[in-house]
Length: 164
Image 1: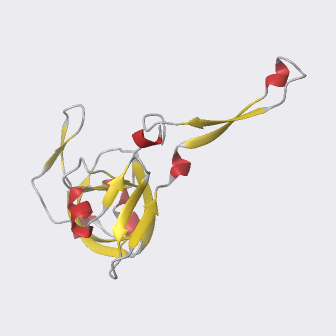
Image 2 (image 1 turned 45 degrees about the vertical axis):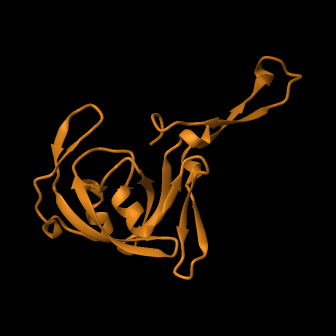
Image 3 (image 1 turned 120 degrees about the horizontal axis):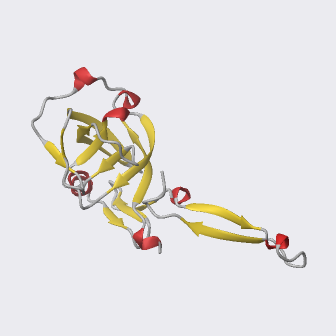
């Protein structure tokens, strides 16, 4: 069920290539895990203080470390985006929320596992997700049970709960 997979893309944040960037229309704001701050060329001193707290799915609230503005480049789109820096341990390297989605006019589609963008000259641009995060090849050798059988290659789809 590809339409149940999250949308992870590889993008550029302030000139640094970053994979496992989650596009989530359910998030009002964009998030950056604290562990990624220095990897995208920023320092804790660059953070703008904030009193925002983030509540996770379990209901636990965590105060944000601050706000940081990064240039987000997805395809031909380039947009300055404010990220809330959070100290949580999450499976993504950055989360692009509705603030980014609406500002660039993106259309994320879990059904098609892609993000649609329009270029400055009005042409459609399709950004495909990093599907290799969810597929692992599973080789089953049935010859150990019956030597007359051939090796079977099976695609095993991983869901977001057991994927890092």
